[in-house]
Length: 319
Ligand code: UT7
Image 1 (cartoon, rainbow, N blue to C red):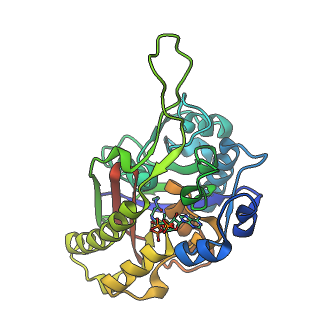
Image 2: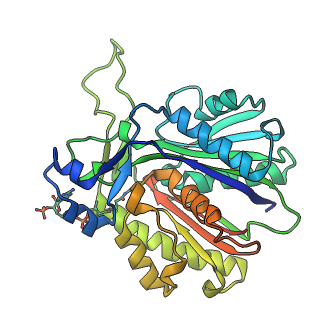
Image 3: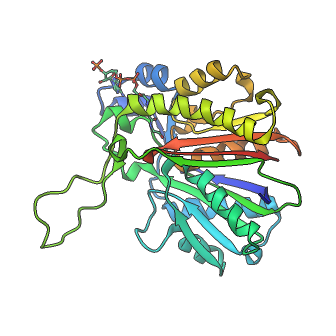
């Protein structure tokens, strides 16, 4: 347990898509979407690529950390919607920034950023890396079924990054990752391809989800993980300054706030303007807090990501 976050950055596409705009081609309304999810609008890639967003977020994080690209000795991208099936999105980020070191992706959907922290922690602890660049980036718009109102209104595109460096004290204070294997609950099937040997048809590569199941799973994940993080670290939940949870639905956040009895103002929110950007939600919220000057040295931050897998990643970090 050996790192701290030196700087963060983020980048969103320029195109804003409002709920009213979706209502023009879907049987939905701003009233339904906002009251059921807390989302007003989302950003969607039009002329940007995911490589563009990932590069911009990474550059901003390096600048905030005062770390030169040449000092980075590991690049990890968390994504499920990369510009390339191969190589890893991290290779594109390394190429754009002129970084020569190990570069690979981790795939854990909405828990991906926390998994990347966990992997980086191991590299730093084993002396394999000193400065790690993590970029969580998603172009959810490419895997959505834009005729399915129950899913496409929920997601958006974007990227957020963090630069990690070694730390003398024990930090993070607790780190957890788990999987409850349930592939069909939230899934994007792989590309069908054009093999002449395939028998039968394959499902389209679009997102399918049992929303109610994920909702229940999400509330339980946040509550159980916050309690486990606090107990592992030997701190009270009341000692935690900021709660940065995955941004899936405002009602999930509200239910968790109520069940945990935590102060609502300590819970980060980006959902209203961005929708769910999967792995990028947590680092985007961190970047917003950092740039607003709300993170003071020594502050305790609890992060919980949950989603497809069904995966949960949780981390209690000192800023
Ligand atoms: O990263 C994790 C990703 N997963 C999630 O974010 C999923 C978490 N789950 C949720 O956020 C909620 O379960 C949803 C927002 C997906 C759905 O909310 P709900 O309150 O559970 O609604 P529901 O699925 O029970 O649907 C209620 C009604 C249905 O109509 P009927 O059958 O009652 O006539 C739906 O067809 O709402 C209808 N509906 C919509 N109506 C207008 C579903 N989507 C829409 C829509 N606009 N966009």
